[in-house]
Length: 279
Ligand code: URA
Image (tube, rainbow, N blue to C red; front, side, top):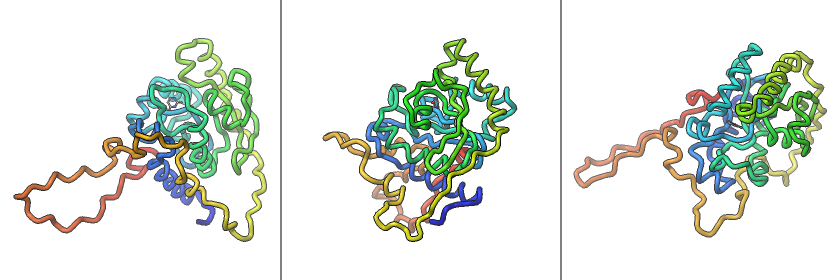
């Protein structure tokens, strides 16, 4: 497909990425333990994007990022700087909840990286706030921890786009540590000044004249072999029950007394991101 250019085209493409992510089974454990994929939500044409770590239990249940206590704090901090959630885009490094809220594994971060890269490429934020260590290390491409780099804006090229990266403490960490909350709040109050800066110059993209036949489309890459080798026992399927609420209800079982089945109806369209309140 041609590179999407207008906000509408970028949003349409984002919907396709969402559909890909929603069916993703690259991480066997996460795919079989999640309730649903938490792709991200907000304004698909936002100037400001927040990238957290991974969904927790509440997010996994609701299909939306940052809806628990950390999300309430994020909403509060946004309101203090005159912004609201629907004007920004919020997502995570991992789109699936790690069981027991354990840390993301490196293989999972790698497997999920392309979704985040596509989100950045399509939303085209000017400013990206990483929340906590995982997002900060991934998007800075550097192991320096959040304690060293929080509150310092820098221009970074991520994928094919230059953004102003502004690392912040993770709100969940600030919930229990008053000193961290103070720092997070002070850094947060620096966001308007970062947003007021001009968009960073974009790197020149040299499009090849001919499509390179050996280069796989990113969708092929996502659909390729799972991130981890399959263990011998567990099947690599998303259990139907995990799609509860998203799939049309299953028909009742047939009995001998049932009248002949009517002609199959056209397949119900699955709810899109608008219906699910995502973007
Ligand atoms: N913590 C995160 O990093 N992301 C969420 O969506 C919720 C809590």
